[in-house]
Image (cartoon, rainbow, N blue to C red; front, side):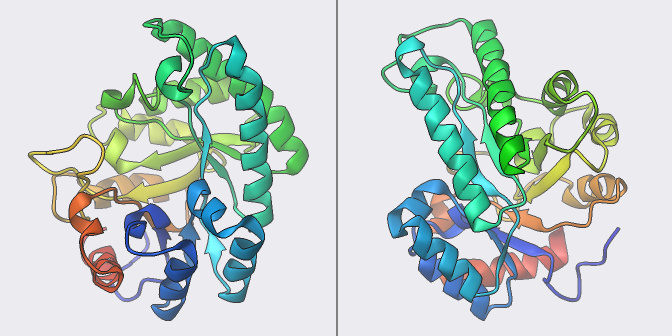
Length: 287
């Protein structure tokens, strides 16, 4: 297990962590000033400044990417499915242009939430099937672009509206069916916030193996949690045993970036510099 106590060279900042404090360009500048070597930008932030400008800013700052958020949101009714296909192919293209090692997939939940305007449904099994079929279809395009796809299982509280893939077992079962040769073209992004509760987690991390462990995200689970989406904790402020999970991940041979991703009304209310300073400090003390 790597010793992260002395520096923060393996810290990547998911740009959602400070999305309310500045533009993507301002976030890139702040990371470069503080010696943060990698980011994971969101598509809406890239769109706001333009893809070409974002690519240039990343290159000029000599930053790497630890991932690109996000593709997915697959379930939809027939009228929206071509839109879903085109949107996800664009996400692959954007990830490639930015030099990302993977495109993170948040697969979507019931169709009316994944793609507004779709007919309401309560058929979760149909959403599961449509998500997997759509990943299989996108995988062909992603292979041609040499862009790995990374399924991110989300906490079950998001099963209806954001992701009907809710555990490492479920994500890896999809990987087994769609990429049985374990080529690395399809894998997972493990976010401790979403999977820390799972009694099978250690076993599923071991099952995952290095080729399928594409990304590792950290934050913390607060008790009580006052907002199911926007009340994530800074590492060390909650109940997740982050070092234990990181130990399991790094036992696979994972040596990539540890990505801080915090959706938080509290942290969005502070200055960008204060948030980044705290992320650096907690990376050394709580991760």
